[in-house]
Image 1 (cartoon, rainbow over the protein chains, first blue to last red):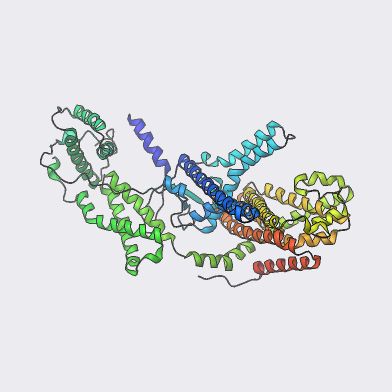
Image 2 (image 1 turned 90 degrees about the vertical axis):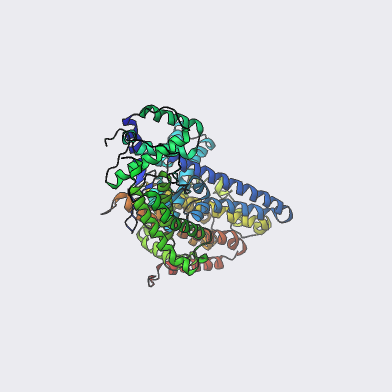
Length: 288
Length: 340
């Protein structure tokens, strides 16, 4: 990776980060959820809703044999409407502000102004979903049902309604029409387990590196190294270890994990010392 | 100088010292998410803001001093989770519901009164247009009302048939099974809600599609009235319509008003930014829309059950008027605002 590519990747992530200062004055740096995650969450929710409806219908048919058929049908019709409309509203009003699909994808709804997510905002953003989801379908349905409408009119209608549905692709904040109207955002809210601290526990066989040997890398490389150490894939470790050895001119003498772990600890200590003194070296291309 | 000269402050020691707090906060949040604020003891409740602040301060320190990505990510996720729980839960569901019915819903409806009048005029205009057209030339009817929706209620129908469709005469009760009633009510409710949600949701397009939808509703209404009035059934049809129509048309007008509110906010944002104005209007409109769906549920019940079971025209008028008065009083009688 070159310096330019590195910088590009960093600005791309920075573009998704929104300042979100709590009353305590800490910036939480919320990250906007990507369109792919949003779509995945929607599909998951729709699958769950249809599955629930199917089960419910089967149950109703089973009941319907005993009782009147009409009751089953009524409940089904109402059930479909209520489930479709209130599934999203109900879950997003909960303390986690996310439907099961959103939870699975690790995203949640928040109010754009940093305040509390109000019930009316949740209602507004979800009633507009009705439009975004069903208008293109309705346009298609209308076109095929009536022969009087020409093909081009149908295409125009579908395209027009799709621009509404795909609105979130056309703005930086990935807001759909509903988010726009309700004043909300969808942001990342994953849970991250606290992994063990790999920088402690000095073992006896640790190697020592000179300052010049440690000076070749910056924070980006350090965190990549951390990732490799945490995933513990022997082939990746071998590759990384060989790269570092070649760079600092050390022979292959010790085990890869011992080498990498000592290098990581000393590089981290060195860079953190720099941080304390106000020097943040983003990557190996940045000057000391 | 190499690793031998570690600074006296080390991020590992920082983590060792604070980790217990983070774990405790994590456990508390999980408990809060799973079982709500009621499940916490008073000690835990008192601890919650302390642990929250400790975690936020840890995050600040970690950002400034630590390069451990796993630690940073964990603290960030924990703080975000904590922030939304600590600042999110302020009201119980019950008190929120109570406030909605007592204050928020009527207040939201009052706030859109101008839009409500405009939409009501649009509906009336639609009804008058189609009424005068159909009254002059019944052929117009087929341009306005869909064949499937009218179910044979068109100018070619006989007086007896029309009478039967509004629940009078011999054929009325006989051909309707008991079962059909609630299917009918459910269908009407879902259909009407769909139309209302659409006319609300299309509001952001400067309110134009909303007004068109409402105009169209008025048109089919006027055309129907013209057909029945032409056969001398105007009074009976009025009763048939009135029993649920006051609630349903009121709800339709409110949904249109909610849409129009968003449309006008987008076109004339005033001193605010366009986005901000739209989101403020959207919140008011959202409250109105919950009310609209509830009103339509009532209308669906009145239409599906009340109308089929009550066949006396005067009684139908009475119930319709009562409902209208009820809604008007509920929405527009001034009351002291909720201070809580």
